[in-house]
Length: 574
Image 1 (cartoon, one colour):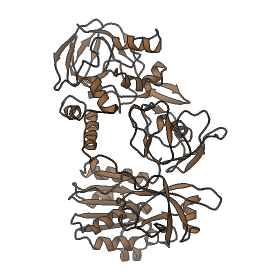
Image 2: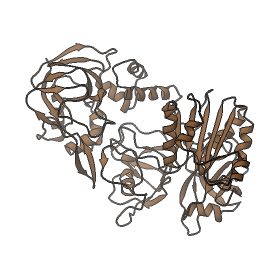
Image 3: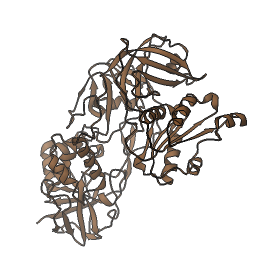
Image 4: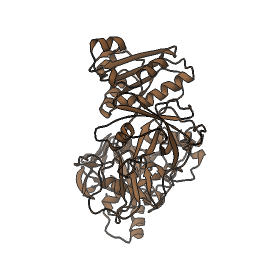
């Protein structure tokens, strides 16, 4: 009969790692005597990153004595101690390829239900000093698993483990783990997973996304072309003293492929000093007009925006990557809420073009904030489009306008604040698209959530890099992206397009992610070993190799930066 070998607990602590600090509870140690198991935890235990660990669905982590012996042989080590894999319960028995999601067990006074496999995370590798361990746990089908607490009570090493219930569908922990992280997934098992009530909501959501992708609705569309292609500047139009629009066309006069409303272009700009910075700008035109328009605000000391606003001329040929981005107008019949500030109007203006071209009968709300009419580019264009829609509402806010300017524009004095947005009484069943400075988008998201709009229907778009996902890191406030410290590298040039950084790949750097870390380029990662795909990033141009090889390769046109090295010059959308 299976038995409990050790109960292990530990409170989070700060641990040095690669010049940074990680706040983690992965350091668990055996306790003697009875331990009290509660709904969210074992007394004396805690988690440093509650986004990925702990909580009702992940109250207790289980790992097996058999897996300890397996890894001792694999690594040639004999120094493992119970709790070293971050588990709360070390057990003899309950192998991952036999235990099923939804199985229930009684240990001592407490009763548990299996909810999901262990989350792949770099910290278990940090704890053992084996950085590749997250990938090995998945690849060798030995992840361990989490349980929720059905009945609280005391447990103690030596207690027997009694099975009290069997999960529906007989989907093992190992099969569930492989279904999420490994290629060649079985569609039948995917459907089975979605019908297991005990499976944690986070894993259910991931499997729903995979099922949608298998049906074709979840696949990202391939860009219209790979890398960069030459496009001719057909027009350069000064919208005001700070914003310039440029229209790009095919050199041979053919129609350019249709974009999706809300997407962006990435341009390589030949500025006068001989450099060629790469920048991304949202489309501001109708998505199927045969050409592309972007509208660019001149930022103080901005090399690229200064070139566009002051020196770019019609007839210039630029290198341009195909339209990309998932901040796009989605189908539906409910109200649409387009909220923007400053130059953030460009992607939502493209959405407005699409709604007008479709002769949409949806309720369309246009909410925009600017300093005043002189700082409000494309205002007349937006107003004309809104007039063509039968169910549109326009609300413009000017923070520094005269009473006469407010009257002529039918604008409201002040900023688009959380309180102002709530006062508009926007429909709670709307789908919202928000673009502007990051604090503005945070305020608008909070306001719309407060009026009852489902957060899943609130979409935001950042001009710059996406928010970082760096689980567990603490104690270090990153500054703006910069060149890496130390002597310049001698490898291929790596360009982080959203962050405006181009730099040679350093000789002793293991991955593109490590270079991004050194440059303070916001990056998104979790496992750092090619398993979880948190770090997947669009590759605009170039080729990479992998070390270690990812367990499942990313889709074409994307790259896993945590284990990627450039094979030549590369441009990444980050």
